[in-house]
Length: 262
Image 1 (cartoon, rainbow, N blue to C red):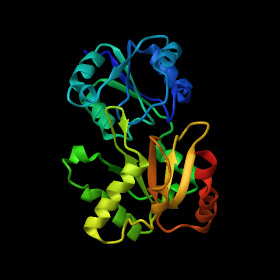
Image 2 (image 1 turned 60 degrees about the horizontal axis):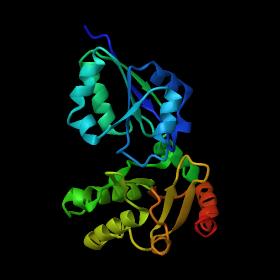
Image 3 (image 1 turned 90 degrees about the vertical axis):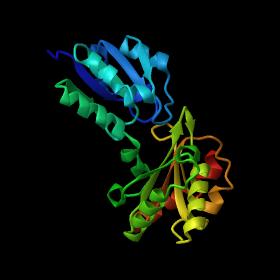
């Protein structure tokens, strides 16, 4: 008989202080608590999180959640298992697949939602309803050196419809793709396709440290951003579509953000 439970607890955008009261209560009730740290850069402190929860928080690898998720599900049949998920749970398909398998096994499930980059992008002044499908730009080694043509196609489709494109930047073994690396990959794609979807004259938004006290937003042409010393700041890229006049006015405030904050 299945008597356990699987809870996916969204931990928010930046650190452990983003955890909701509902999420904290759910974690405190769990028999074992885990956290995944491979889907994006987390700026929190694991020891501080453990103090809040009052118990040990074990780190899960990609293998634990994808290839060997059956081990977690086996535990959840008889025990209350909680997994902290960065941002908001179910934005990543890995977590949705885990939830689906749990329900197939008649394991009780609970999802505690929170903020994610999908909801935070409105801080740039761009209207959320004007975003098309988003993409993830992968590290070249993941695609064996092949350029991600599907990424180019989505950006092209969104631009044709006047929609904005959110570009998530890959994370692998705690290494975060930088904004410049993502831009370079898109420029390589443009050099190959030559359809003027993403050029050095394209205006883009770089949004970094979302959810922190000092988020960084830069709006400029690609050629100007490539000259900036962005260091290793984890970020996302946004390629605007057709801008409403209110979006233009708001984005104009960030033309000088780089000089003021970096």
